[in-house]
Image (cartoon, rainbow, N blue to C red; front, side):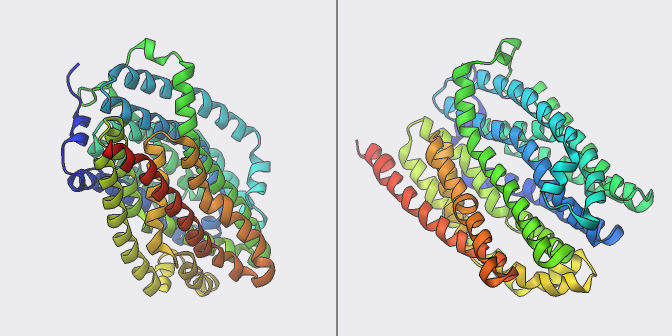
Length: 451
């Protein structure tokens, strides 16, 4: 078999590789984040602030189901990167085929369950009062498109593992651009309200799915699987599952976080506080896109070189990725500290929301400059196939620190306690990650380099 384009991971300079991988990933995330951001602006301006809160109720549920595909994609992509680094092409093909089968079986089952328990799920995630009905409308329609999103997330990660970051970028951009166009048509022109916003989202997921199918069917992809590769292999499934569970667990904790946050904030401040959190949540998705882009670009570089036993290059990739991500995170921090009210006014004209959101935003992003180390550190263990430390470090911020804090601090500080929980959990999880990453580098990479 001819050499795949991923061979460049072991030859080009680490700085150029990270830029080559991270820039398309960042652009894709930027467009996807802009989609979520502008979608929220459209909904807030054309439907109302309650609609923003309604979408915020639905997002963790639909994203969790879609994250099943992303988890299988990232778990399998780690295997594929290391398999390509070790020139084990058959394992790469088998892994990809098993990813597709697993996603189909699991995601479709979850969507059916999600539709069967609509009311209970919406209420559980804080869809109370005036928020319930618009949330229910949005939820039912968006869930039809979630399987397409799941397959798109799977394919996106495999593209990067194969060394095709630009195509991965296109796969992320297509649904985003499509959603914005359809939002304008369905909501503003045709006046379909929440139904229009939901159908625009679902149809846009289909656009990405079609592109993914085209890519892997064309000559652009060198992962040409056959029917035999779709048959589940328990060893491959186990490895995909152990690594993918890291991503799935992270998204599960995110969904649980939304559940607690929406309910706690509704009890403390009603619909206004839930809407403020929805706006801050959109900024969390949007503002950090370059940092997440570097993290995504880092994964295949570290995984390939670890599989090829180029340990010095692995160390270099860690250091450069943290440096680049930290610089970008600091710039983002400065912008958000200076212009929180201006940002809030883009989303809504509601004076109560405008009064409350800027202070919340400053608290939420207070520790942004240090998060690069936590993100890269957790991603490193996933890239090299060490599922347990990857899982623990990934869950450290929201699972081990943030959720306990939002259950405790509001009892003493009210709503301020909710917002204070963000920077405190960032600091604690970064300290833990720094300790384990440094220990791993000394015990594994440095020791193997000197042998």
